[in-house]
Image (cartoon, rainbow, N blue to C red; front, top):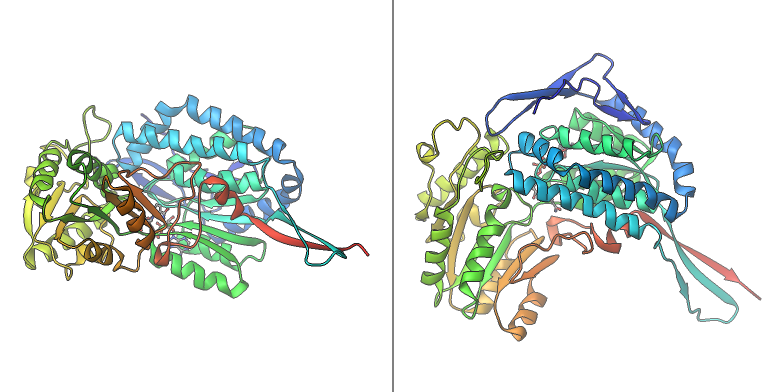
Length: 485
Ligand code: NAP
């Protein structure tokens, strides 16, 4: 696929703009290290223009009925679904995930447009029974205002629609800052909104200097809310800066998901789904399994099943048929995985399969690759057991006592997703209630659907995206207290 140079990739007030001094930055294919194209490198002044456009558009957009707003989202949903193949290819080229996964992400991204097209009409309020007969009390939800949305590269399409669709449904207007690694998917989504006829200024996008764009959002009194998906470190920074104006800062952050395989688990299912959780998007998923706790009674059989499956994974350029694992996003990501791997080996971990020998990767792969690797004899003092990995490295630790496994699973500041494999209903519920995570998957590792609230506890975040809960984040609750006597 050929790309023109996107020197005018800023989408402001319904039009495409370039940066005053025409600054651009390069987009690189992580599978081949080839330069794909250039996009505009915007900053403070472009963000201020985008915020002004979003502020001007807010008045009309917020007054539209939910039904009126939903029409644009339905159109955007249809346009996205019609274009799955092309959008999937763009995503694979700039992000690296295999084409089938990329197309799956586009369908998931479209599902948020559909869900919030439906939800737009359902911003229900409440009529409260009053403690006195002399009053009536009602609560309404009103759109919070202009929203600054900041998104990461690992799901460059669905992380955008999971924020923008509920914001628009609620009646908010948006200034989006996508990741510099994956701006092409974001540009394609703006083109879809443009074709869907969204009024100018309702959605705006500035690619470029993260700090300058973020600061302009934080400094602006017009921006009432920042919705961010990314690392916990950046999330904490935005929250502390946002506090200066008491901005609402809604955060979807990093994870360190445990999988617990109990001794009554269906081992074939557990191995297949553990593999899917860990190696989807090459381990670069906020909810992907980071730690495996396996009951010692079934450890040998489970490890053998997992090893067999991991050894079958095909690594390579995601555009090629049959590839299961693409590259990591950049050199820094490979270094991080390698550092955790070296640390684990230096403290006694054993290689079940894989390893850091890059010569084992098929010839001709110039990109940012790391072999899918499983480690055993893993101990709690290893970095891999305390830090988010974001790569294809899977540590297994054994346990003999169920409560010990749950305590270990909870022993982290993260709290996004946890998974358990068991066929016992009582154990399912007891364990799910004890796990300190916003999401618990039971014999299930794909909990992120448009109809469900997705979000973390502890340092993994403070909000929900998806479901009716996702639109609620963009609605401010107002009490109307009416004396009737
Ligand atoms: P990141 O480094 O925090 O960056 C995320 C976004 O924030 C990027 O667009 C980045 O732009 C921008 N950013 C960084 N510093 C900023 C600042 N001072 N002001 C404004 N924007 C700023 O995270 P990432 O490496 O892209 O994404 C991976 C992380 O996201 C992982 O920790 C993963 O777990 C998490 N994640 C969480 C969820 C969830 O739903 N909980 C979903 C997906 C990913 P630059 O790249 O230009 O700095």
